[in-house]
Each structure stands twice: as C-alpha cells, then as structure tokens.
Image (cartoon, rainbow, N blue to C red; front, side, top):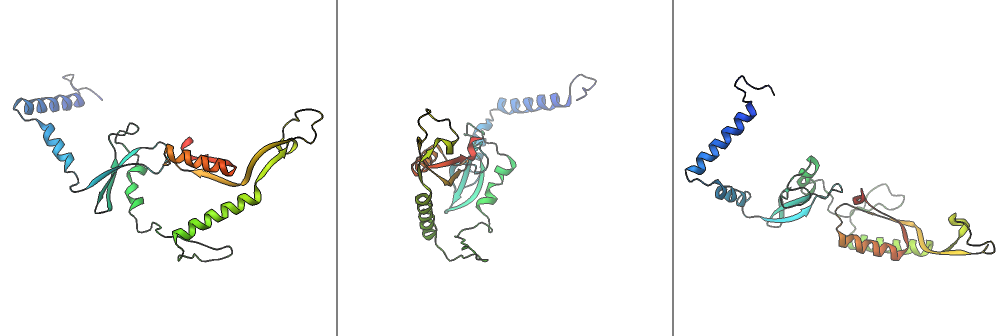
Length: 208
C-alpha cells in the first residue's frame, strides 16, 4: 500500500478512526459489550444450539446446530471449538444443505442381485438384519485359523519346520471403512468388533 504524503496510510487512518470512535463512545459511558452479548443471545430466538462436528474432512471442525421444534434451522461454526474456533470452510459452511435437503435419502433403498430397479419398501430393521446375517455368513465361510509360512511370504522358523504354520485367525473377505465423524469411543468399539471378527482390512478416513 502506497502511503499518503502525510505518511499515514489508508489502513492506519481507518484503524485510528475506529479506535477514536470506540474510545469516544466508552468515554461517554456507552459500553457496547452488553449490547453485543444481547445481540448474540437473540441471534436466532427460541432455538436450542447443539454442539456437533462437521461431517466432511478429517479436521473435525466444531459446529453449532440450531434446532427449533425438533427441526434444524441453522448450522454454523462453534467459536468454542479448540480446532476451528468458529471458522468453517465453504464445504463445512454448507452443511445445512446436506442435513435439510429434499433430495436426501430417508429410507432404505435395496437392489437385489440382478435387479434393475430399487426396492424402497424395505425397513431399516430389515436392512440391519440382512447386513448382520451376510457378515456372519461371509465370516464363517472365509475364516482361516492358520496359514503356512510360504503362503504368508515369511521365512521358515527352522529348516526342519517344513509343515510349520502360523496362527492368523482372520478373514480377507470383509473390510471396515470409518469416517471422520466417528469419535474416540465409536472408533474403539468399531475396532474391537472388527478385530473380534478377524477383519484385517480396517481403515479410517480421519487418519489423514
């Protein structure tokens, strides 16, 4: 920025003017902090603000979800978040359009093998039962207790142990992919479940 002949830049002038104006108001006994707090309190009247986390990337920016009569009416950054301090990227700032959207799926869509159309008559209980059943069937069919060292590409523990096998207790037909909004407790339970099933391929988007 090119300074003026007086040596005072435009930015310095505006900053100084703002300081004089605020100082003058405070000097007259006008404390604006109470008015600012009142404005924040009634920014959206009659709502309950629920702390949440942005559902997109692995940063985990904090959000405030404004709810009235059981419906979301606004989503904005949470200034108390130690991660984002109230800021959101353009994608996070548009989260409201994700939550409140006539195009959002609110029922189960099922397409049977070989079918060309979606079946929208299935319930969520039916879908959860089917997922659990298929997981168990796949695990029972593919679970392996031991593998040879040759299969694993490992050197033999000794020359005489040609038939030696290593205990693996795993299945290679199931994978688990987690999202950035899974909190520590959810991740803990998810990993415990997957390890108990013998799942090897476990990934989480938040690791990036």
